Image (cartoon, rainbow, N blue to C red; front, side, top):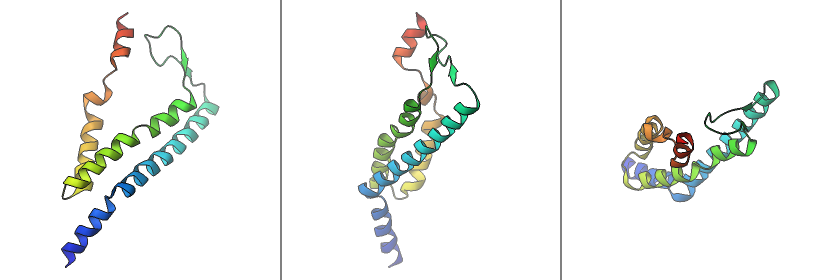
Length: 121
């Protein structure tokens, strides 16, 4: 009986509504924390820097970019969590392993084709 209860509990925790609430809730918290760190860091030092050495002119890091960088990955991560939750017996472990592998892979840090074209001249 305990196993059936665990199975139902696992399925309800990994339901679409719960997964997206969790992913967007985490993204919102991350966006707020990153925005606060951005504003505190901006008050302590100048954030005007040349982030792309191949760019023609220095660019300023904007608050909007910081917030979007926290929010945008929530959708694919939520979709991946939903798929893992549907097919895996232990979705939390599988998703964690996939997330770590993705974050540590060279593909995650690979520059876009636009950035490569700009760097090559």
